[in-house]
Length: 62
Image (cartoon, rainbow, N blue to C red; front, side, top):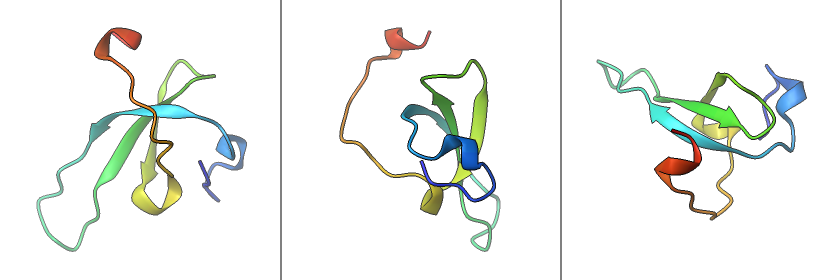
C-alpha cells in the first residue's frame, strides 16, 4: 500500500473485499481493503494500491 492520505498503511498487505461502482465515468472506483494488521476496512483509490499476485479464499475473511 502507498497512500499519502494514510501513511500508516505504507508497505502493509491486505485484501480487496469490495469495489465501488460509481454512477458516472468521471468518478474513479474505490477499493475497500482489509489490511492484515487491522479489523476494519479502509478505502483506497486504485493508484494507492499495488497487487501482490497472492490469491486468498473467501473463508480467509468471512
